[in-house]
Image (cartoon, rainbow, N blue to C red; front, side, top):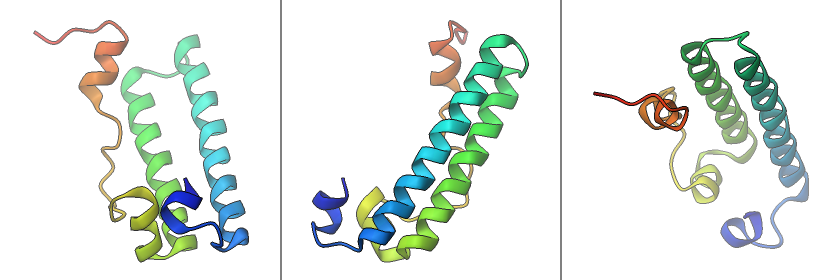
Length: 99
């Protein structure tokens, strides 16, 4: 993704930092998902916590890259809005249908 949107010669240190942020997010999401499956966290808490984690990761990526390169890499400007997870789609994926 980096090479395509930011070029093959982009700062390798920044690439590694972004990879660490993404790996950290993935690990936290996996732990949170395990808690959800074990019944240790409600779906609402899962969604709210995941939105928070994604927002924190995006903020860290924006800090590392700067706003211009963040937009080039992720296709949008960073927003502090926390609704990254589509609640309806997530719940529907779990088998909850809206009437």
